[in-house]
Image (tube, rainbow, N blue to C red; front, side, top):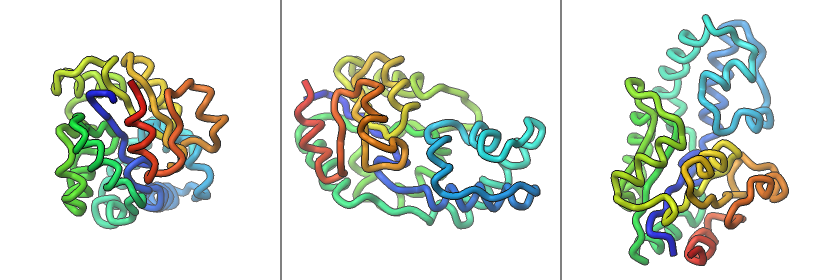
Length: 218
């Protein structure tokens, strides 16, 4: 088994899409843009929030700061409560932890929001050795975040695996020089064929089978 298991949050530990869509649509609607359907989120899974606003609604660069500020306010009031933990994920993570490997989260979600969410589910939050999230004062790519976690926990990238649900996650793992495990139960990859384009070491169909699939990796 790998010495370090790194996992994303959105679409891997929890389904946060309802809160994200609500806050993006509410913000866009207030700015005169037409709300989008849930399925359209597939096109912006894993990208930054700024890119998401421009791609989904065609916002201009000079509108992004306002949109981001409004989104953050909405998310802190309501959006961060609109999520569901995937069935079986806590048991899978606990079994990995009990097997002796280190666990970490890497997410482009704001660190304030991820800390609040993990605070609600303390039995999940306590399983992780490291949580690396977006900080407004420090700009990092996802691959840089992965390498930061490896350095902090003193584990080489080749002895690590990143579990994610999008092509952005897959490319970040490749750039960092570590294995990638595709979470097909999330809302990033539309199909197994979609994920297999990025040569994952393993595909995971459900949170319940995460432990079995990840523990098989050398």
